[in-house]
Length: 111
Image (cartoon, rainbow, N blue to C red; front, side):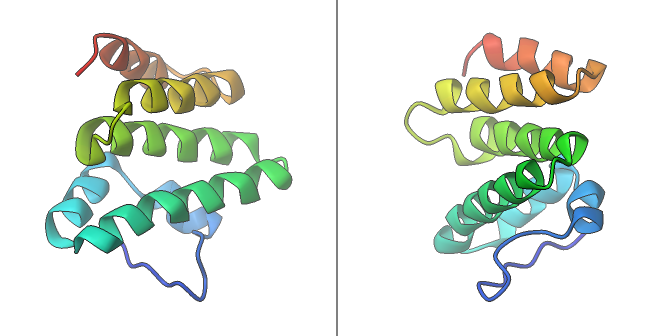
């Protein structure tokens, strides 16, 4: 799925978010400007808060998983391990899935 950043609508609708994959994040990172690469993280963050507020915890968990992946694999900012660990722990807290558990193990290995 092609990701677009719309600053007038700075969050993803549930169906769009649930359609995103880690590969989509990788493609976006490869094609986007540096500013949009960072903006994607904040759109995901805004989406996470939105779904938490609506008590859509499985969707919030998936968003947290995507955030952990994006931080750990693509962005790799300072403290990427700690930040990714925080988000993958939230994903597992809200929806224990084998995919999230697998990524927790990968993140725990460090980068």
